[in-house]
Image 1 (cartoon, rainbow, N blue to C red):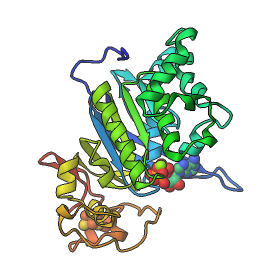
Image 2: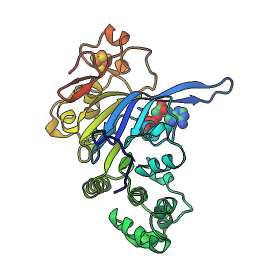
Image 3: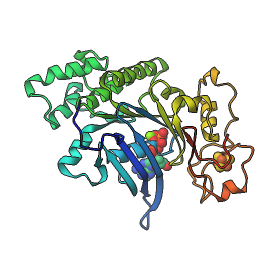
Image 4: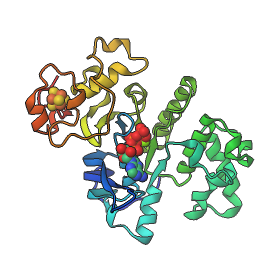
Length: 328
Ligand SMILES: Nc1ncnc2c1ncn2[C@@H]1O[C@H](COP(=O)(O)OP(=O)(O)OP(=O)(O)O)[C@@H](O)[C@H]1O
Ligand code: SF4
Ligand SMILES: [Mg+2]
């Protein structure tokens, strides 16, 4: 396992505090509007633990993941990884942090360089970080392909000659090559058939167990993360609306948005029983000024003027935090 910084033993592997990300929308004239994508998000991941990040399209999941690995700029907040200040890292320390946290990108079709053979793509991290002597590289690549369930003969193929599931496995092998302490998977199964989804989830579970890696897994639907994540964080329009142990959230979701997410999942678990009605309207990226961001779609019977005026803070009760004035 990769040796990482000298953080206090009790400190979680990853600590994110008050993180915000905003983009500038290009406009024909002027400087461009600021578009908030992530607002004031805090999270922690301990060594060996997997956290799921769940929410609809546009809720800021990828922006948060990319901010953590410094692929997009952060407008506010703090990120610590293995005791190191991620946002202050430069040069060699940034390279070391990037090795420790590996991101498998959302779109496997575009994440791999189309002109690079699979074997070269998997070997890239080994070369950059000088992890194995050149003579041993091909053997190590074969081992990594085997670890993700791919035949080593695929090393000579190009990404276009692979299925979506195979490309996803190559992305994971590429990340594993540098022996990360944290593997971030952005929607690892959303573009795959249900049977292939199950195989990739089983692969991720096996990797967690064998390597003791920590994980951050991003998904649209809660049923997917049940198998791989001990804790879940639900995001809505860039903010955390509920977080806690995955089983607790699935068994009794507190926030009206989480309830609606579970109700609208393609194949809700029958053991979950009756859940709340559908949302009032489709997702809009319009963020209400002040008040609860979910108010325009909320079906909670107590939804009222307070919801429009006052933003609900995350409140913890029994290990689950939820941002609703009125609770379940
Ligand atoms: N490069 C960018 N420039 C401007 N706005 C962006 C950019 N990338 C993302 N956004 C906006 O930021 C918000 C969050 O996007 P993000 O991709 O992080 O969401 P997501 O939860 O990952 O969605 P999906 O499930 O579709 O992948 C959206 O409103 C999106 O339009
Ligand atoms: S604060 Fe009000 S609008 Fe927001 S989720 Fe709770 S009941 Fe619904
Ligand atoms: Mg995304």
